[in-house]
Image 1: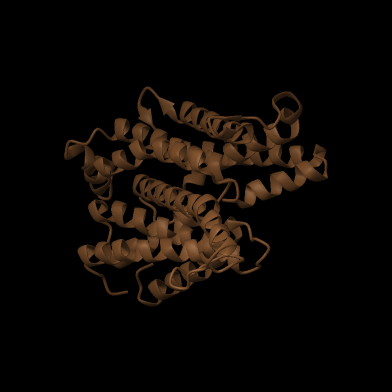
Image 2 (image 1 turned 90 degrees about the vertical axis):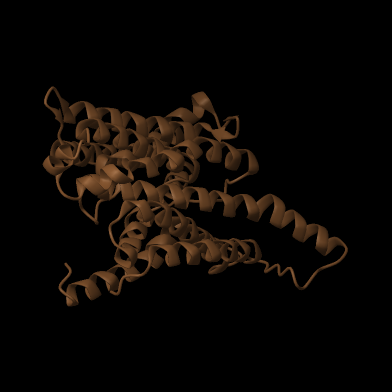
Amino acid sequence: MQRQSPRHLTVLLLLLAPLVFACGLALGPEIILPFFPASGQQLVSNELIVAQIRMPRVCMAAIVGATLAVAGVMMQGLFRNPLADPSLIGVTSGASAGASFVIVLGAGLLGSHELIGVSTIALGAFVGAMLATAVVYRLAASESGTSVATMLLAGIAISALAGALNSFFSFIADNHMLRQISLWQMGSLGSASWPRVLLAAALVAGLLAAFPRYSRALNALLLGESEARHLGIDVDRIKVQMIVLVALAVGICVAFTGTIAFVGLVTPHIIRLLIGPDHRWLIPCSMLAGAILLMLSDAASRTLLAPGELPIGVVTALLGAPFFLSLLRQQRRHGDL
């Protein structure tokens, strides 16, 4: 694939994002077009749909898509593997197990109350993600540093344990609880509201601002850990910081929207194929592309089976997997893989 200018791609994504945002507001079970104004009761209904339902969803999709994509960039740079994903360290599995625990066992004790716009299920998912990360890091850390290989193995073990817990909770759940677990694991933006959007934006803003600061370290790690140390990079400290930041970012996203697959895997890889591995451009471009991908996926989830709604995790897999496979085939044909 021919490389593109990073500046040109950034400009293109900046122009494309508002257009996709507008499409997300217009599309759904009822198509609302601004250049065909309604009147009377229909106008009031359209304004309510756009302002209170669609706009929070599209904003949440942009926030979560950008965050998951950048988390994928960080993981792929840290492990020096373009197919790495945040789920490798067990964050997503831990969050899913935490949500399932609250749905099945915590419902009677905690109920479905909300704290500053966040449900107890979301809090359970966040706690599960942080516990999984803490266990993985504890197992991988030693006096000689943090072993990436051990971290991967620990992540696989934690994911297996979390999968077993999810299966157990699904087994003892009633029909209503089982449906909640299934919908959570497939991802959904249906619970997006302005309080949740504002809280999510406040929580991830600092993380998204911090990630570009690691561009130089990630570029140095492309050469190998020994070479990065010779260039003055504190590799062990950078590893710990990136793992913690990624865990926080993914934990927050899963807490608000459930498990959404493929965004953190496909988006960075596609952008890398287009502009190369320089993280000074890869991070911001992936951020924009992730937001665009999830906004498109949200619009598709509300439109394809209208008036029903597809889980957004299903849509991202349907959109991402074939495109990703075609890119891999093209790269293999040209001898790049």
